[in-house]
Image 1 (tube, rainbow, N blue to C red):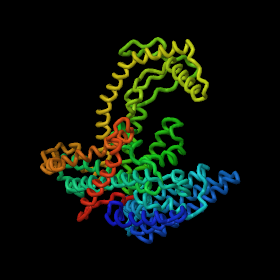
Image 2: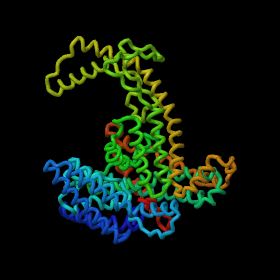
Image 3: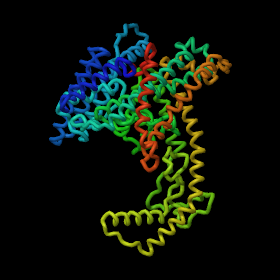
Image 4: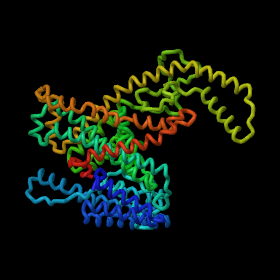
Length: 587
């Protein structure tokens, strides 16, 4: 059963919410959610419910043992219990997800002839395995208390909102809400809106993109060898849209269902296709996975508080594991290493920071040509911030590359002092020196306005090409991700980049027809990948009745209309349409 199925929306979810609302206390509400979650997971195979329950039991016992050792002050004992838990969790995951991959490679490279066992991957095992590992790691570090109630821990791991498609929820995020949560009409309204928009994103946008991809990109190296380069590029562009719309749609629906009953899951996607670098892209893409590898792999290895060689090794390990987590195939490992190379280039070549000067060394003056005369009180020893290393920032944030000035610091401290006096009820009149400083700061601000405006314009002029270049790199990455056969991948890249002499570049009617027939849809899909709706919605809800009385009174009506339109559109797309791909089968 998947979220984008009419049975789930109108039968399973509706019945779950009805029974949940009828339950009087938190214990019965949790019991309701646990029973429905196990039933939901049983649709993928009843025998795998036993696996899920057993893995949670193992983590439950190890966590109790870790806390027991911590209370006795035996940190090594807690770490030993954590290691055993991680080995058992990863061992189970490796058997179901990677055993066939390893057997196939042993058979291929050794030349041995033996039968490879058929092992079915339990759906969602990658997600709840990582959740259980993060829970035990946090208990061993003393960041959270071990859950004494086994069934509450089982609810955390098996919650059908995020069990099969993420996001990877940290136990600390939902610890209090598992034990105690309150119903909120505002949260429920937001949850319904979030679920319905996610459902429409999946049923209408992602599924349509998937259909175009399947029509343009055939399966197998032989068919790819006769496919034109324009068809491959157009097909991969639609796949780039599909994978974001599909993944983010499931996260939207999970977050929405959580809000309906009082759970607040963290955001998992933050419009990654507006990123200005590969580093920025991974700050926005699959945030829960990136955070997991950062906190439980990268930082324990030493993070960036080490030598450059060691840091590069740490990045290599993290991105090899990131690629391998996505699937048991060489293309996923290559995909992870591809981003490893990009991030190393960005960190150590493009955006390399200058070495910090030692305290006993006198700062050297740098001759920097400014478009206007610099202020006399500006310190030459302050580090300059390159505008090329800025991420997207709010409109009200200063984009100037000027160094911090003493007058600005004095102004801020003076303002803070006055504000504190106001709150304490004994405000004093500003002194003569304070008035002089404020006047000078005000005059400087007026002088800096044209300079800041030019910097802002320069930033946005640089932002667009940086974003487009980053998306080209991301598109190449998704090409590596898409073809899970190395020979097919090699053939596709050869034709796309004209490594065969350009024979693949000719006017392909199929590619042009796909663009022409889906032009209106393509515009909607691209806009859905941008924070346009989100910004308009936040702007609408920031209005007060004094700002715009009509919009203030109709904003809830607009939300209701959005829910109705998204729900009707989703139903129209799902009725009689058997094409509803589920790309989480690898996880």
